[in-house]
Length: 302
Image 1 (spheres, rainbow, N blue to C red):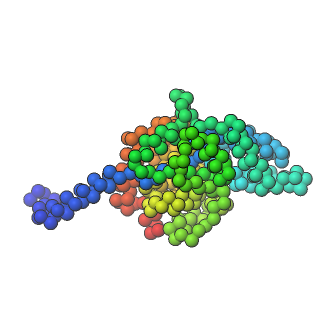
Image 2: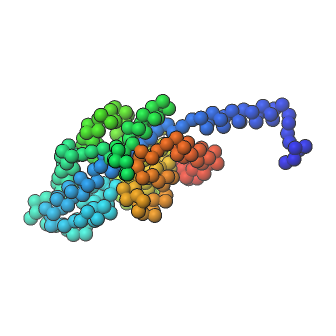
């Protein structure tokens, strides 16, 4: 439209001014919530999981290496036990351990290891703690809510919170475990879950989006695009993106991580790399998605 053809009527100018005000107001907003994965992100627990899995699976005649354990990072432990049993079944009566008992044994071993030698995740290169406290401290003034969305049991989550209490204090309002996730009657969540029903993940552990959708519901956030998820595993990143949330991935093997992490909105070497530019950039893209109505939830009329 040329300058001559432009609508310069008072109503048009007033409408344009109002739109600009609304856009500026929207840009000044920020994420309503940040959800942290726990294992391997907040606490350096993956080596502890490897140690526990290698020790406990040996009791049923399954010898694992760290590399084999690494391939299942981010997946719920009961699903891992079922997978290992399917690959190499053991005689539960002869060994004296059912799948459920072995699962409990592994979790119990990890809890004991966390209590004995669990440490906050450290930044690569600098050797400092991995940024959980710094992210919370920076965003306190923005009234951001915090939650943990983990594949681990609530027993382990509470153990880690207690271990990291000097760092995280009481900042996490919501703790969500995928341990016993069940389908609820919320129409929004139910519709999203139906989209992934064919994936057949037992009780909706990661990479199913259920744990993050449950976090969103408990946090009282209406739009998934208003939530930022911090993850270290591919399964967790898939879970967050399947829930239509923004996700920053912090792969354990950075910079030699899997190319599949490209699905994340941003990739960092550690939480300590987080800054205002990254935060603002991801928020702008979230607002663009909302404005253009290209959020997958809207595409499927959820």
